[in-house]
Length: 236
Image (cartoon, rainbow, N blue to C red):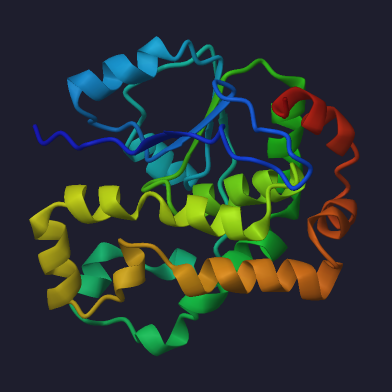
């Protein structure tokens, strides 16, 4: 059985524009918990998690179940538009026209197509119980933009959010298996599928400012009305 090294990160510790700090021990982000190393499973168990929110497709969540069973598990299968058509077999056969997929706009697509799920996620954070773990498959794209939206809502400056997003790059480069890198190279798959997508996070930040005059306008659009409550919970 092939185990994998888990990406696991507490989102706390960042400073806000109004000189507060995001509390630690309330929200973690990770890759999926399928076939993780035993020592990583022990790490997850030690967090005393009360909820896990899984952003993967329902079929993927069933096929690759988490190794850890929390008191409460919620699946929010994010809509990815044309990216939902991608599959490994077609990529290996070089049957995919990658020009059809705008990786730079991927996070904008996630924000626009999943307003209901982001609203639900933020309400889960406000309602508890906590701590909560948020994950998708790799923990970088779907999980990254949802957590980034929360950090922006907590008034963490965009530059800090960008640095936080980029902070997992060493983990991805070190722990992505060689066979995965080879398959990506062989199939001519864009490297954004396994590494970070800086243009996409910058495009999402720009989109929020241009389309909604910032994160608060976006939260108004999606119907989230508990921003003050969320800041009370997450800021010290």
